Figure 1 (cartoon, one colour):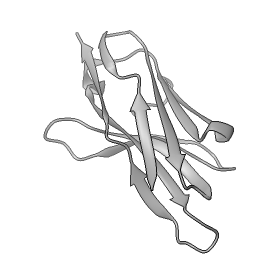
Figure 2 (cartoon, one colour; figure 1 turned 180 degrees about the horizontal axis):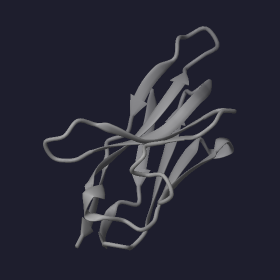
Figure 3 (cartoon, helix red, strand yellow; figure 1 turned 120 degrees about the vertical axis):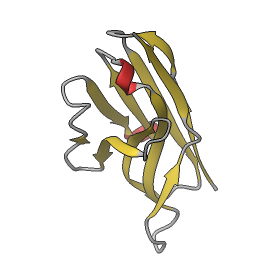
Figure 4 (cartoon, rainbow, N blue to C red; figure 1 turned 180 degrees about the vertical axis):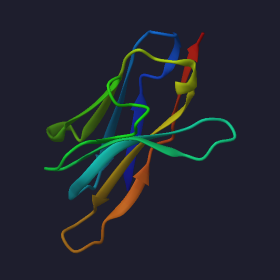
Length: 121
């Protein structure tokens, strides 16, 4: 079993900052990528940022220049530093991991439970 546990969401005023964290735990053989998605009310879940192992980070256009994703491989933890937050960033933010349970298994997606980020104007 794998668990992704997020923390760091909350309420912040426009222009403020938040830092999200997500730790993966359990029987993990390897993690190919970790990232963050978000879902606003009535909207589809969308990519915010992803950081693959040994690859280039990828950001949504809305996140470029304001958000920074980073990863601590030793701790199986991914972070999202969000600066200059806007009301339109309000959403539930979900941690994502693409991982393998053992050397012979296929890659599969796993998701955290989500953490609410609310930006007031």
